[in-house]
Image 1 (tube, rainbow, N blue to C red):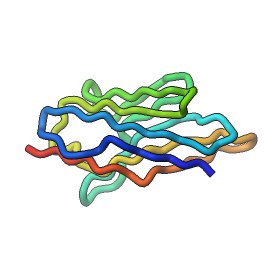
Image 2 (tube, rainbow, N blue to C red):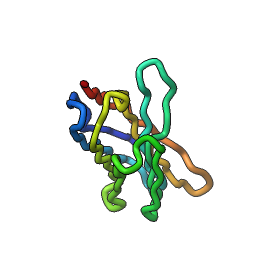
Image 3 (cartoon, helix red, strand yellow):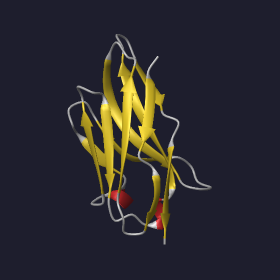
Length: 119
């Protein structure tokens, strides 16, 4: 069983920055794509950014140029540097990690970390 643990959320003023971190542990297999999702108040969960094992990344349009995702394959960690935050970024942010087993891929989720951006 893979454990996924996020950290780094909090309260920040508009225009500020935060860095979220996530660690996946407990796997005997490689960790593939790692990603950050968020669930704004009253809305569905949405993909914010993802990064594959080779370092290829993608971003949701509203965060392009403001957020940067990075990972450390040796430590199975992923980080999300968030700059120029605005109140629309307020959400619970979730980390996901994909375990690459022999025959399949299994995605695991963290518990989420709250990010609140005040205007």
